Length: 199
Image (cartoon, rainbow, N blue to C red; front, side, top):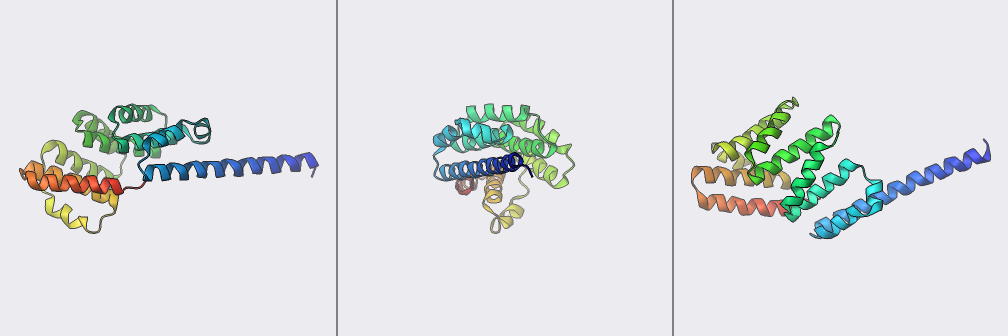
């Protein structure tokens, strides 16, 4: 092998390794900042040129949305979500973004936007996801409250993400049934479970 060819291969391999290490360092720092509720520093890190260069556009906006959502900066979260929804994405990424948008719009009480996302989710063919989203929509926007016992039985074994959603839906169902005390109790539990969620 020609010495110049060998040097070129070594340089390319070193570049790829350095790039991967830098991506992992940025991701670890971002997770540490997020875990300690230092959301403004997360955004600063995401705004740095090195972060913009190393991360795909989709990932940058998804991370920003996650931070703005946790920070409860609804204006920035909605702007970022609109940008995400406008990106050209693979089917898998599009479904992930639409599902996140559906859940966000539901929590915000935006029925029309939720329905728009639900219609797109329904076209994906994932029966379990479609059923879950339709049930969520029915509870939040149509006043359903017949799933209380079933959801309460699932709480004990639920992971934090499931627990947060179950508590949110139980809060809505109790409110729909007219039990304000239980609705408040589950709203507090939902907020607590949301704080446990990792980045």
